[in-house]
Length: 173
Image 1 (cartoon, helix red, strand yellow):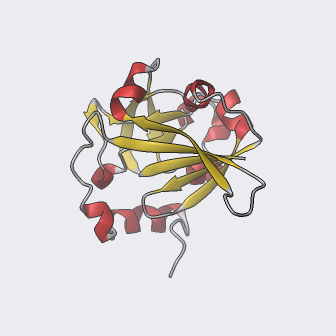
Image 2: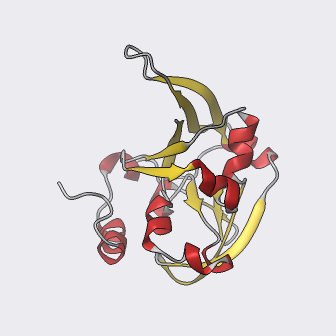
């Protein structure tokens, strides 16, 4: 099986043409009370390597301060407007700090994100795109998005690879 993100072009082509069956079943927008994000703390306990610290439903995420920005992305032809809470606000609300985050998607794709990214850049957990709620069919229910147009350094493959769509969990290390 090929890795989820072989290259940006192949990745985008694959995401438009191949969708896991479990993801298709989740193509309707989540209800406000549906749990859309789990946050875990990595532990040294071999029998329980991750401890669930927080679960978020869409309504709770929307109660946090929201950030909206418009940016170019490699996944859309035109600039797109994203809305969601800052990743750092979600982690602060769960009283979590660390050195690394592991973002996990619905299809179990994983990406490591340095904790410094969420502290230094306004990366958000986007729940809306151009004013419409994200679904699994259009990269939701959550999508880690950086404000790529705000800094030239964010317009790089490394940040695009850290931009996990169909996000279901964060693991703090």
